[in-house]
Length: 114
Length: 112
Image 1 (cartoon, rainbow over the protein chains, first blue to last red):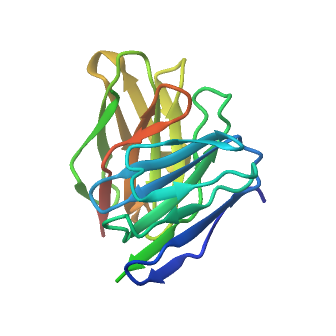
Image 2 (cartoon, one colour; image 1 turned 90 degrees about the vertical axis):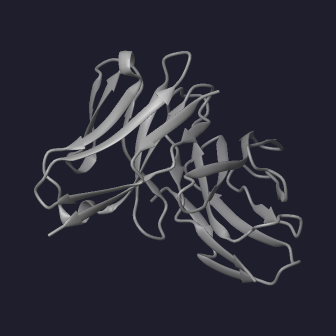
């Protein structure tokens, strides 16, 4: 079955450490996205990528970095510069060329930094 | 800039009662509109979407939504709530490409 796989589901890190969240899709979608979810704040866009080797900052990119070396993969690194990294992180993908195409989401990674 | 407002962070209904979740958007051009549902510790699942054409959109699990341009609204309804409908619901809008802007979400509680 086609879909988006995020791993791990739960991640625990000490403050000051960088951590990388994995996102892989087999939907053959061009565009991939990373959102952060906090209670009562909805989803906020961190980074997105429309094509391999290219990506753009979203609304809350500070303290995060991404890469897009393969169409299927869009890993997110939460750096030590991110002041409040504990959150639920969601990866999504869509067919960028089809206007109004919905996002397909993975099941998320819950990151806890202490 | 686009924005989405969901009225009511929490909505509580009795099983069998009407479900109404409100969503208003701001957009200078006709938008694409979506409703998603999220169960605890899971990703978002598409309920329905409005792109063009008929303004009453039917989705999965008996939900539907009506696009009203004059009111800039896209409210989600279901005639009869079921316990399994308890979840968080998000309204979203996109204009340029497929970059979605989400509302803050509404948590639906269904009482037996």
